[in-house]
Image (cartoon, rainbow, N blue to C red; front, side):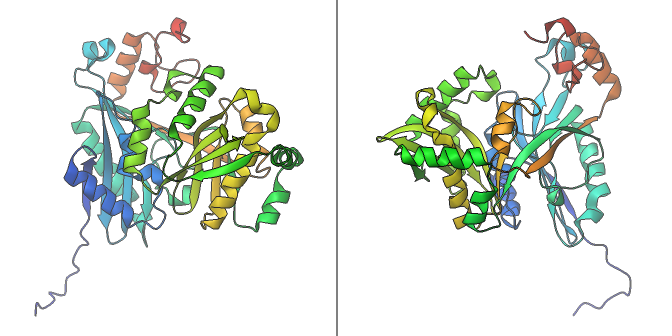
Length: 369
């Protein structure tokens, strides 16, 4: 038996940056994620891999210690192909969290005590990768997030539907117009089908693309078939489709992501020829009832393209008291390089629209190009 020396033994902590493209790292990332009671889908390696391109890598900074565990998934993006970076700092990179909700997720009995250690160590690692800036889209659940050392900015409210109530209470908490629309859809013969395997994916994809065309959505909202195939293969059990059908035809459809406590309205659309039947109201109601039956606590509807626009007001009708602040975080890790690249890009240090990072905003007179 080893005798105690009487001196306190320092707790061992392990900091690593895992790469989702490396099998051993992806396995370790998924293993740590699996130890988390909430297991948010946005923190899974397969989710981060969805947003990788030839100039980025899906990584996750982790810190494990007796006090708790931290998972910070992010995309490390190369700037080497950018003329402004090549002229100023060849080999520069920057960091952004994947589309949706992210940040440094954490859990454990005293995980807050690891805050300074994590960010100090991570910043040191970032300096070895020539990281110029960092941009984070934060989760709507701050209790699961590590404190952030950078600038935090409120962007707009998002809508979260509380599900911890009986179905009849949920129904009465909808705006009157939602209840009216659901009843109209039911009278019109619209039914909702739950599809946990993507059996009707082609029908979903057709409506989704037409919806993006109709909304004149930016290219960032168009995802190819390969994107959805990766969801089907990498996130089994963490997605579900809901289809509203009329006469056997899919007329409204939605892909919902699934975590332990929350479900997320992710992507979808409605056939404009059937707007009058109000199929999407019925679809969302049925999706919420499904989530309640699965023991979920929240249905996250998200926000609009702009604060309080028509899309946001539509979503808020399902949760009149469900507005939650959506914030972003940012840090400039190499201030001189940041300013020089922004100047070289023609955007200046602070674009008038507040775009971050400024060097990716483009010239001031070409914001709409």
